Image (cartoon, rainbow, N blue to C red; front, side, top):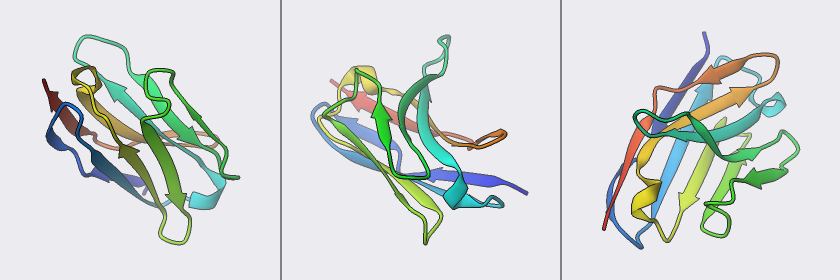
Length: 114
């Protein structure tokens, strides 16, 4: 049974930082591309950042230079360090694991107040 469990969301003021974590189980973690997506109510889910099994990363233009994705294959975890947060970063953030299939976590709320 595949499980992706996010943690680290919360309420932060504009300009602040948060670090999201995602713990994966039930998959061969090192073989999966892992990513963070976010969704605002009424809008489509969008890619925030992604890291391949080889460690290559890509980011959406809106977060480049502010967010950093990383992975720890020994712990089956990924992280998203979010700095210089803006109110428009407010969303539910989802962890994703991708190989032949897509797996999703339950999401964690990030709220940035102005």
